[in-house]
Figure 1 (tube, rainbow, N blue to C red):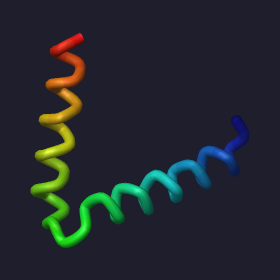
Figure 2 (tube, rainbow, N blue to C red):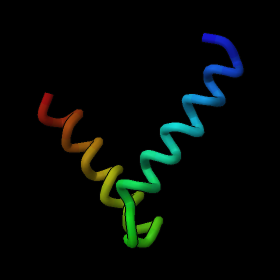
Figure 3 (spheres, rainbow, N blue to C red):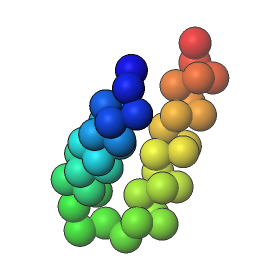
Figure 4 (tube, helix red, strand yellow):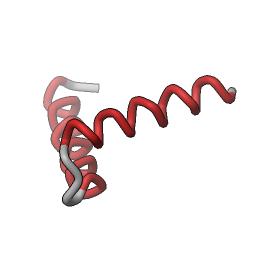
Length: 44
């Protein structure tokens, strides 16, 4: 993956996260996502 592709992927993922977050506070969203990621790793 080239550096340009990595930057484009980062921009795309950031945009998706903003859409998913909606009106939720960024800090609350971060806490929610970290908890979700932890639980998904824990369940496996």
